[in-house]
Length: 85
Image 1 (cartoon, rainbow, N blue to C red):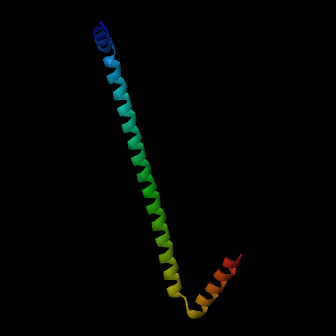
Image 2: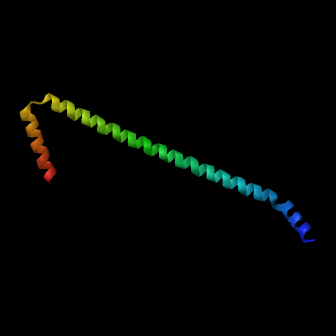
Image 3: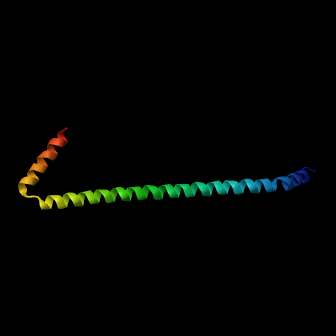
């Protein structure tokens, strides 16, 4: 008798159990795609920052290569004075 009641109950609720499982699977997939998108955005921002730093270094190198020795010394002194603050 109890076994028949369990079978009858299962017959009524199995659809809801499947639906709940599908919803949970969908939420998990949505979460994973959000994490992936966030990682890609962070990587893109890091690469942009790296590129800006490299551009600044190239500009500084080119500027220094165009200077004579006295101008380089003056620039170094100014940097050291600003760094002490």
